Length: 51
Image 1 (tube, one colour):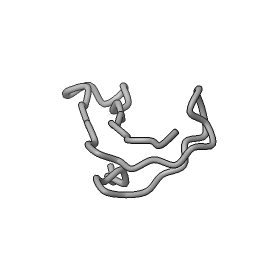
Image 2: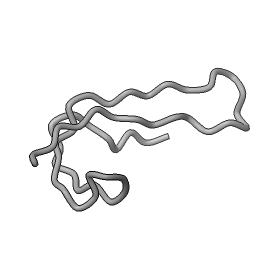
Image 3: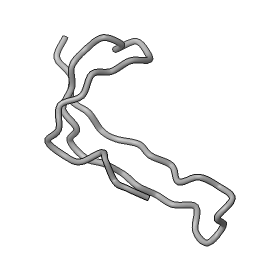
Image 4: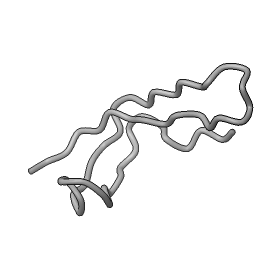
């Protein structure tokens, strides 16, 4: 799978209470589900936003 969430990239948040705000990806956390191919990989990031 292609890793498109890379640190130091600008993002715009579309969901949640911070929707519509700009942010910077600080750290991308990619934790796969092991050898089970039927389960998708979880994708999460730590992002910094300005209020």
